[in-house]
Length: 149
Image 1 (tube, helix red, strand yellow):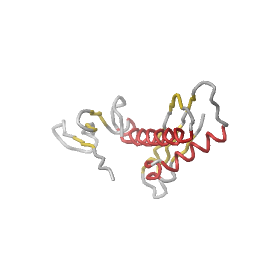
Image 2: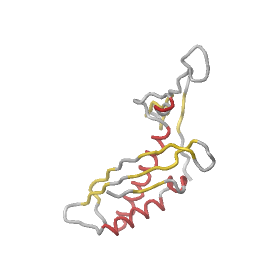
Image 3: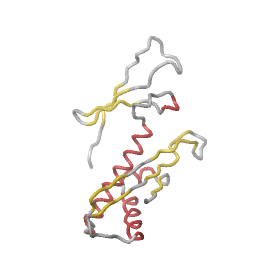
Image 4: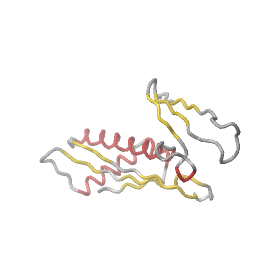
């Protein structure tokens, strides 16, 4: 199997390390050259201009779902022209009473080549298959909703 990794770096910028008095801003490096500034979600004191782990989780799910969907469509001969998604991570308490990402909603919009149409039920079935085969969705289990627009 593949070895997939990131490098994360955080260093304290403040003189003292006290609860609520330090920045969680850090960098995550993907591969040899791509870095992203990551922080806590804004509700937890992070900067809104930085990404946060919850957004990154939604991004990972959305990307994985799309790539799985595209692979299935290519096998089926469905000529996908474009794919757009708006993924939302929802924070709340899980069944154990702990804070977690309780649900991620995907809102994929798929466009096909001119002249190609798909029955809405067939499109929904293909999205469901993509969800079932998506590695990230299988990791997250029951916390994903796909809302086809």
